[in-house]
Length: 122
Image (cartoon, rainbow, N blue to C red; front, side, top):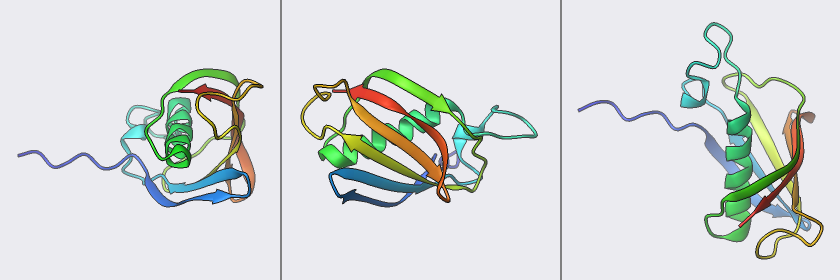
């Protein structure tokens, strides 16, 4: 029987903060997110940033959600293995996306923005 695949991230906390949400997660060195991205210099791929945003949104809603669109998004700094990220959400916490088009997110490492944008969800 093959060994189980390591988890892509470890949630350290997930909680309401004011009228938004904060998820803190550690990306282990063994995360499958780094497989092939890039050999010898692993960086967390953009799709993994969105996976963390989706997890934070799901926790905020108390149910599994899916992203319906990415309204804006800027990757600002690379993230490596073993780092801890804070995922901050603000905007609508109602069903679907906000009347203004979505939920804003910021991913931070030790207070430094690594990516930010706005997504819609369902």
